[in-house]
Image 1 (tube, rainbow, N blue to C red):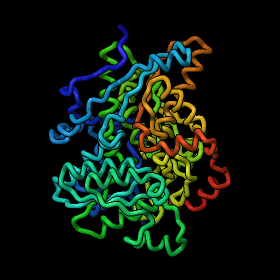
Image 2 (cartoon, protein in one colour):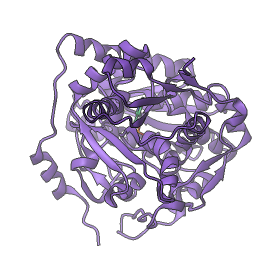
Image 3 (spheres, rainbow, N blue to C red):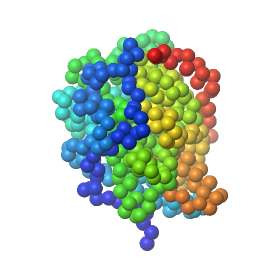
Image 4 (cartoon, protein in one colour):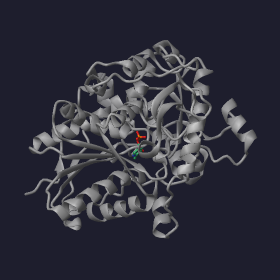
Length: 450
Ligand SMILES: *Cc1c(COP(=O)(O)O)cnc(C)c1O
């Protein structure tokens, strides 16, 4: 009998997170403050607990996962690794396709892996309340759930277009006890300023971040939490790649290529970094970040210091960016619409140690539907990006006859994204390639540093 699901026991949930910094050839570029000088850890204490700040700047290879976090991970981890026998047959490819399914978490995506850790450390530090933002709603749901588990109040600023498009995500957050506002909101200076400038402002992730950071910075009992981009978020997500490695080990296989959708980079970092450890030790494995052609941060953005948010409240980070005032086209993969990318992912890409590709929207839905019809699971639109790139490679293998082992992270299910599938089926979805002109214009508004 051929194995379809490769499962681990709960005792095999990783005991440590893996920190890729330990294996990077060069140390990460430091974040800069408003004066253009590197900031110290103390600059972050108004919005983060010290334990997370220490993780943010750590270069230790392994960081122990607290028992209380592992106990909550036990609700859905280890997540299954699947061999996509039926997809392989449908494509007629000699490639062997595997995927790790993070949609088994209660919130339906990988994001809870870090939400639980962040809630734990904030609760330990005596924080009572978390302010955060959400785009598509995946992160807000994850933080709402994690906050509930550690007795924290959670306030979510949800990008206004998504607030309208995904009412059930809002209900989910409320079920887990969170308070949700459409952003721009009247709750903050940043929100009010945006509404004064244009009452129809549809919101953006950059703006919602400004609101949440302002909320946290102006309330002593409140901290901020981010669902991607930051080093400690990528760190927490490495449970995904570590489990996958163990699962491959069980069946005596190893991927030639790893694919993951890439917005801010935590999903990619989580799935790919543990494999990067092997690559750094000489193993031949290709790591591919997959992004939307409409928000092509890595493949077409500038590698420069930029702010993480619209109102320039965050430190500046050296990263690939489309400009902090980037207004994303309303594509449906809401989780991939951020203007920047993780500094760690950006640096590894800049040093040509990982790869990136951009895929147009229609191709991602076509791939997602092909996948759902073969494997059953309906993927999140974000996950469809990795599926599209993986299927492309599997079809190349079909031409060359190569039996490569391909692995992708199925970052979440699409049960709350059926409106996006509806648009696809009714022919309303369009491809949008981000214009060169807008990319050039962003360069002029980047902060002048050094
Ligand atoms: C947020 C999200 C992503 C993107 O993760 P990043 O860390 O921003 O790259 C991918 N898939 C799903 C299902 C998501 O919710």
